[in-house]
Length: 280
Ligand SMILES: [Zn+2]
Image 1 (tube, rainbow, N blue to C red):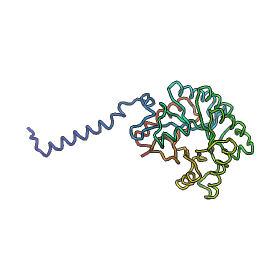
Image 2 (cartoon, protein in one colour; image 1 turned 90 degrees about the horizontal axis):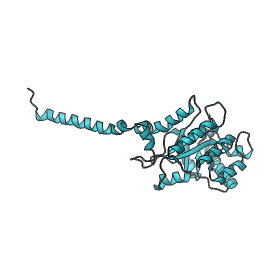
Image 3 (cartoon, rainbow, N blue to C red; image 1 turned 135 degrees about the vertical axis):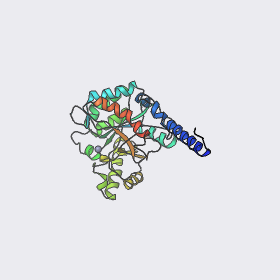
Image 4 (spheres, rainbow, N blue to C red; image 1 turned 30 degrees about the vertical axis):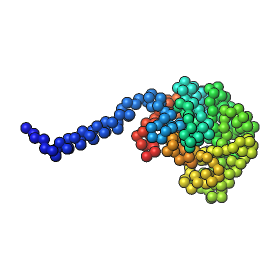
C-alpha cells in the first residue's frame, strides 16, 4: 500500500493544477468551429476590436493571380452581405482604433491597390449594388499622364463623389520605398497627397506602401508627412495592437478555386492570431 506523504501530495495537486490550467487555456480552441470564428469576428477580448481589411488589385477577366474575376468578386461581396459583414470607411476604422468609437458587427474595409481601370468598370458597380464602400490607393503620376490601364482623374472624381469609393495614396511613382533617399520618400508621400487633395477636394489620410515594403524609419516619415495610417501586405486583422503605420491586410487572389480560397482567408485569420502565429 502506498502512503501519501505531504511531499508527493504536493506534486499531485501541482500536476492537477497544471492539467486544469492547460484545459482551461485550450477551451476556446476546443469549442470554436470555423463557423463560430467568423461569427465572433468584430470583438476580441484583448484588443477590443477586430477589423478585416481585404486587399484586391485587379478585378477583371484576366487569368492571373492578381486579377479576381468580376463574377468571383460579385460572389465574394454577396457572401459578405449574406453573412452580416459591414463595410466601414478608413475614418471609421481610425476612430475605432484611436478613440474606441463603436463599429458595426463584422467590420470590413475593402481596399484596391494601384488604381486599375477595371476597378471603375467592374468593382465600383458591384460595391454599389451591395451598398458597400471601398478604398482605391492610386499612383498619382499614372493618373496625371492618363496611363492606359489605370483610372483617370475624372473617374476618381466620379467614384469619390458617389460616396462608394474613397481615393487614397499609393505614392507618385510606385517605387519601392526601401530603395529611396529620404528626400525622394518625402516627395512620394507629400506630392501624392497634395495632388489627390487638390484634384478631388478632399483630405488624404492614408497610404499603402508600394509592394508592401517599408521599415520603421519610412513609417516615421509617413507620419511626418501628415498621414493618419499606412497599409502593408502583412497578413492579419487590424486591432488596437496594430501599428497605425503598419496596418495588416488580407490579400485576395484569383486561384484554382477563388471562392474557397476567399472563405479560407476569412476564417483562418482569427485562428492564426489566436495561436499567436501572427502578432506574437
Ligand atoms: Zn501596388
